[in-house]
Image (cartoon, rainbow, N blue to C red; front, top):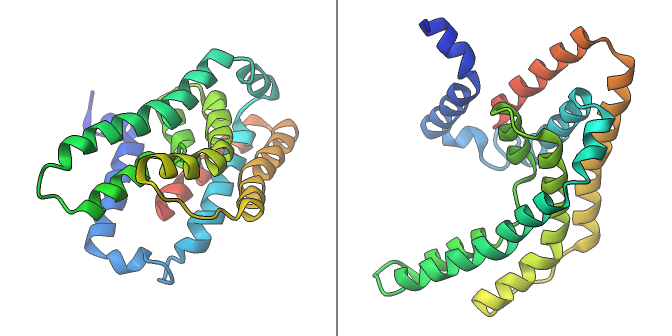
Length: 211
């Protein structure tokens, strides 16, 4: 396999490495309030674009079929919201006897209690040829579950939690996940495959630019 073929095959991983390198060299470019405006471009535009792209590339039958994989969904949610936080807690018990700062350990536990990532889970699953429809469902469903379960996990493992703005989080998830997915599905039925493929490439290029 030639160098050009290798680059074409691994373009996504190379793009991630490039973005991380740029972020390392120019961190101020992507901070909140910076030129990139991540509080808008990533929180709203990038996530919406990813799910619009998913709706554009998946048949409705694939999405409805993915809903039937109950065992898969149970495994993903239990692993993410039960097994992983517990494993992190056990690991941090070992680290607690080391000189590592206590607040750093609490931060790691907090991250371990978070629901699955909405955007990167879908984009990475698609990049490796996985079940994109199942990834979409579990990302969205896990995020909705996390609104309730994550504060409970933090209370269990850290002994403290905080209030959660349920209505604003629900509305944000609905507008950035469900609505773009539905719009993508409507466009899927109207546009020829060549135009859909072009939009998909543009969407993933945009994801790398803002990622």
